[in-house]
Amino acid sequence: MTTPVHPGPVQGPALAQGPAQGIGMADHFVMCSRLGRYLTFQASGRFLITDDFATPKLSIPKDAQALAAICSKDELVARAALMPLAHRAASLDDGRREAFEELFELIERQTLSPLVREGALAVLQSGFRENRIRELEAVLSDDLSPARTRYRKFLEVVRELIEGRLASGTFIDEFVDFTKSVAGRLDFGIYSYCMDRIIATPLIPLQVKKMVTVEIMRFPPLIRRELLSNALANGGVDRQAKDFIRHAISMHLPKGQLLEIELLEAVKERRITAQEIENTLNRASMAASYSGVSGRA
View 1 (cartoon, rainbow, N blue to C red):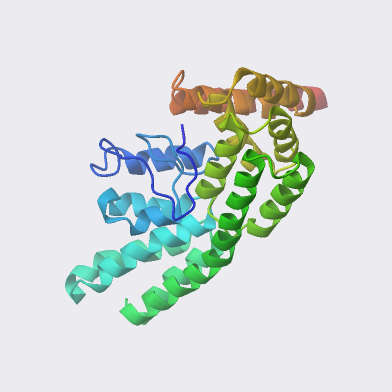
View 2 (tube, one colour):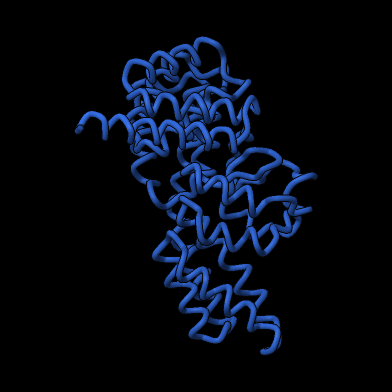
C-alpha cells in the first residue's frame, strides 16, 4: 500500500499511470474528501506529501493541485499545493493570469484550511508577485523543518530498537513524544510511512507493535482510521499483528468506527471501490437518522 519510510525527504513510488497523465486525479481527490479521507494518489494508493508538489516528474495537473489546496485534510499538503499554482500564474502575462485570479478566489472561498485562505488572499493582493510567493514558501518550510528534524531523530530510535539496543518501554516513550512533537507540523503522508514501517518490519517485536497499536487507538478517529486500515491492508504486516489490531478495534471502538475501518481496508485492498464505500456509509447514515427519528416518535 504505502512505501517504506526514508531518512530524507520521502520519494514516492513511480506513478507511471497516475499523476503524470492526470487521469481522474481531481475526481479522485474529490472522492477522498467526500469520504473524509486524507488525499492519496489513485494509482499507488499512497498519501500525498508536501514534497510531491515540488517534484517535477510527478506533474500533478493544476486542477488536482487546486482541489488538494481546497479539500486536503492535511493543512501542510494543502498549503504546498497552492505554491506551484502561484508560481505558474506569476509567469503568465496579465491577460492569461485572469483565469488564475478566478481560481485563487475560488480556493480562498472554499478551502478547509484558514492558512491556505490567507495565502491565496496574500497572493491575489500582491498581484502574483514572486517575492510574496517565496515568502509564503519560506513560512511553509519553517513549519516543516522542526518536525522533519524530529522525524529523522526518531528513525534513529527505530534503528536502535531493531538492533536490540533499546527497550520496548523506552521506544514507546519515544514514540509518544515523537507523535506529540510532530502533531500538526508534519504532513500525514510522512507520518503514515513511519507507522507502516513499524507495523510491517519483521525485526520489530510483536509486543512493540501491540503497544504502538494501543497508542494509535488513542488518536483522533480520522487519523486512527487511516493508520489502522493501512496496517490491515498492508501485505507486509504479519497475521499476528493484524489479529491483534482486529481484536483491539472490535473490543474498544464503536460499531460505526469499526465499520469505517473495515470498509477503508477493503478499498485499499481493491475489494470494493471508493464509490461503493461512499454508498455504504450514506446508507448507514440514513439508517441511523431514521432510527433516531423512530426513537423520538
